[in-house]
Length: 318
Ligand SMILES: Nc1nc2c(c(=O)[nH]1)N[C@H]1C(S)=C(S)[C@@H](COP(=O)(O)O)O[C@H]1N2
Ligand SMILES: [Mo]
Image 1 (cartoon, rainbow, N blue to C red):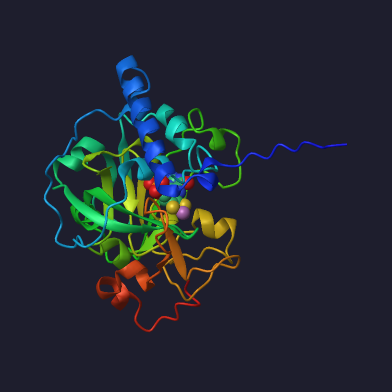
Image 2: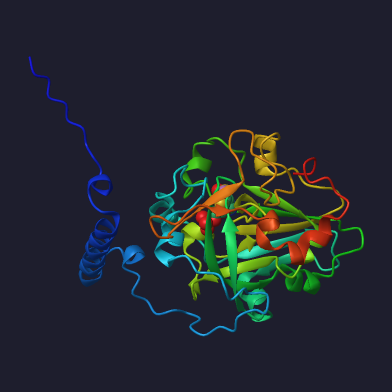
């Protein structure tokens, strides 16, 4: 008897990769054209002009980095409130209500309060910051963020000398966030934290945009943290609360798995995750045969930030 097996071979395996890629681009382009002419799914159509076309680049921006294509940064996301995979949040997050938005600032500050996002932004100068973005899962991108230093917001509320740490809390919106609604996996809302000197460091941003546009909802609209020398999970999305504290806050991932995810989470090729190496990273959006990139200590920002950790054992404080 002949048994017929039906093995599905992905096209990428049987076609020369460059041809395969070109073909996919053609398919994608015609799909986008179809969608925009039909006027549906503006999420995918991407035909709106940039909001901030010619923003000054911040002096810390490294001109030698190759920016990851926007479509990849927008469609490969980690946003556990919506989904545990990388693609579904692009669609699911569109339900998130981001307007109006305010941020509560409290704790060890002279001027606590609820601040409307528009009022916060009215007093800030936006710039573009092109940063490496390295996830603890060993993939990386280069993203042109639009934002301002967290330090310049903190300066407006006057932290007290007793403020040693900063706690960030993401939005709790179970009616739009399926994993919050199901109470799945993590403790909600998502919480992150920094030491006060890390929070005040000029590389640490609050971002409101990327690629010259407002942040897509799946990337953390309307306001997210960006800490480029730490693993991506520190860069909390959809922030509604900033608290200045005397003691280090417990954070979502450290609570979930304290042996896997420390409070510092500085990118460090010499400290492996218990289940995988951090020695190198897959660069999303790079050419098919591009080798993995060797991960750098502090994600390559050592000149700027290493002094924050002088004398600390980075294996212990991982
Ligand atoms: N609120 C919230 N913030 C979050 C996450 C999340 O699940 N929820 N994921 C984190 C992780 S693991 C990473 S790698 C980055 C991913 O940012 P990006 O999807 O914009 O690339 O966001 C971080 N911020
Ligand atoms: Mo991540």
